[in-house]
Image (cartoon, rainbow over all chains, first blue to last red; front, side):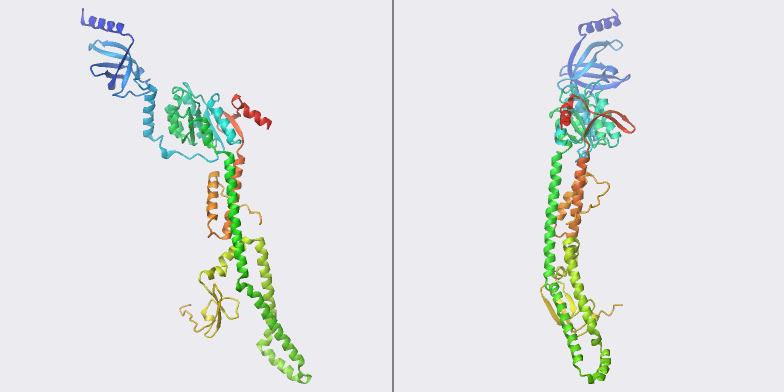
Length: 445
Length: 95
């Protein structure tokens, strides 16, 4: 028997004896060579088996085989004649223990996490009041039913736009990813997006661990809520979404607060506003009344009245004095009259009378206007009082100085001279004083 | 008191900003050092904001629609019908 014959017989015998073997071992020395086939070995404490996986086979694997992990390999033995080398041709490779899906999940999670797709700092806040709620799910599933039921209870006039997509099976990842992207493309199509699927087995939820879907969620311009499966199921879509809801029903609770809550909150705020403003008005009212009753303000009209009465009495006395003069003094009277005309005080009497009457009238009018506008436009008045009220200024320790008998406060030292009588208004009471010296800054141009 | 005049609100105001500003206003108003005129102005703004928020809640149109396809103008949709929300539809019709 030639070597070729013998090796061929061996190969045939081995393959015939083990056409369908399952071998368990730890993976080592994984490498891709030449035509893209994978060469590796499986080993345990006492033995080692060289394996080969054709490119078409290993490229279908959902995971990248990790060295050091235990695998179950399905295949048949083969002797490569030119080298007389035995290898195991693997047609199927499964992680031993954890399922292949689990491995794939962990690896994709690690890869996408490294890219920052699950970054917590990138999570966006959901809008408080979504004008339009987008939903990506299947129309036939329990998820859409749950979401709509809860929404109709919480926010009856919600505007919901559903983009139907299959949520399991071969085409599901592409459909879900496409629907998510569509909401980002179409302006104002949604303020918030729910990606939902009811509960199911791990395999049923596989689409939500598909890289395309996870990337679409992470790239969504619209803030996302994921609601996939039950609370215990965490998919990569959940990790990539801005907010994760445990269930579709909870997504409906997270997406918008109860309409009654909004209304109650607004009503409470309005009530607060009213209460504070009422308090503020009452305060201002008290302040204004205090001001009107304060000594300076209250005394002013009576002082003017007194001044007017005095002026009236004096002019009446003057007139009667003139009347009482004998006719014989007529000539002297005429001359006196002429002289009197030159007397400024005489000429000032009608003016004084008129002006005091005018002041009183103006004051009365002014006070009336103040009182009228107080009720009509309390705000303006009180605000300016707030700012200008002499009481406010006095209470801060300032005082106001008048030249005795003058109505407007003194602003300039050059307007008084030594000996002039002064009236100084303090917070409590007033002072009568005399100028001992008026210092005028001489550098004033 | 006269009816508060409509304080002018910013053009690009959102519901969130309006709510946030509302609570700010309540805080500001509670400051006893606030003058009456500015208090009134704040109050008017507050009333306008709360009207704005209320309006935003009301203006959301009650609608559940399904996307048929995406067109350059946006989504082409139709009202959702089906066993899923049959109960709700019935209730709507009775109401």
